[in-house]
Image (cartoon, rainbow, N blue to C red):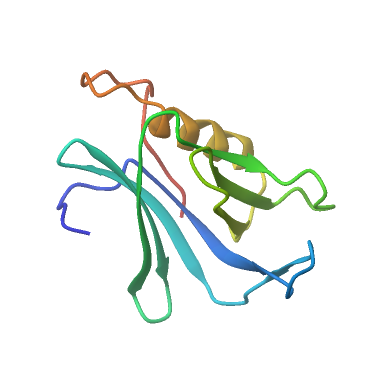
Length: 131
């Protein structure tokens, strides 16, 4: 995280991983934070371990190449998948916010940032930082 500005979006989320070669997704209990920042005209998607304060994932997202969606098979509705269109890569996250009230807004805001045009236009009325 090179920027001194607050992230454009951030929310508490842990990672999930596939159980071997099955389609079962298991949550990792590690407390995490997803945040998005624009640096040098590129949108970065970070996952940071809140216990160690280390960034484990730093992905560059190109407009239209990725989408964050709710995993419909999840009975709680609080598991998200970041799926790339240019590859088969999928990253899974479970929302760790205490309330579910803003879950749908997080997904909406993340996708607006991912698909933001590189002309400086802002799709969002305000940045969301959940605490």
